[in-house]
Amino acid sequence: MTLSGAAEEVRERPATTPRRRWTPVAAALSLPVVVIVAWQVAASSGAYSAAQLPPPLSVLDALADLAGDGSLWTHIAISVQRVLIGFAAGAGLGFLLGAAVGLSPGVRAVVAPSIAALRAVPSLAWVPLLLLWLGIGEGPKITLVAIGSFFPVYTTISAALAHADAHLVEVGRAYGLRGGGLLGRIMLPSVAPAIFSGLRLGLAQGWLFLVAAELIASSMGLGFLLIDSQNTGRTDILLMAIVLLATLGKLCDALLGLVEKRVLRTHK
Image (cartoon, rainbow, N blue to C red; front, top):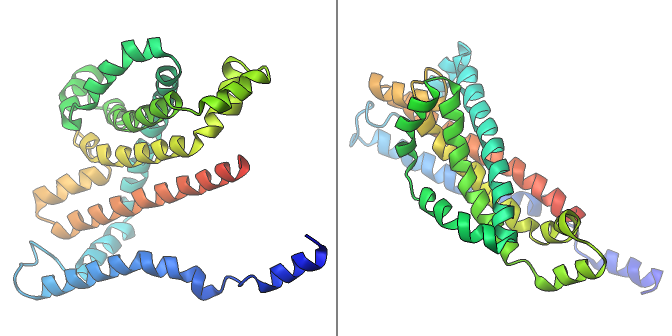
């Protein structure tokens, strides 16, 4: 293509307008807005008492009160810290074990059936055992989050590497790559989208396991707020904690999604 042809193509390509850039944002916000409106209508209809379903403004007032005395930020910081540490530990172990299972049929035959059985154990079933082994400190809470994060990462990576493109592997071997070089330069980049899918699932699962983790003799955290507000009849704080958990989970997923886009762009 000549320079003049390229310039003509650029001129003819439609520019991305601000309106088009905002369209996905508006679409994403439309459902939450509908839910808030329906929530307000239901709370004002008289079908529910304020103790059962407080209006959205009451939840905002509870948020402002807790933010004003500083306790909200401590609850958020504690929960985020538990999720991030647990996710790092669980995802790291899931990556290593998943890679071993995906790359080695022998390891797969020995390890995969037992891991599949443990994956079926409900999150709350781990709580008594973790209390017995690790006490009531941060250890059992972070360990439970790590357990939740481990299984999606392990499952996704082991399956992706077990079904990696054999042609790419042969090309890598033809260029003299073996072992870690083959894994790092050929196999992992080829299954990078699946790896990030597993990491995002593991992070979401970590947030799901957080509430169960903060049932373990906890005095801080968003999961503690859920239980404490239920015991004290503060439905406004209970709903606020649910909204914050959803918001923080989505924010963490969005940040990991940005990392995924950057990594995949560099390996194209």
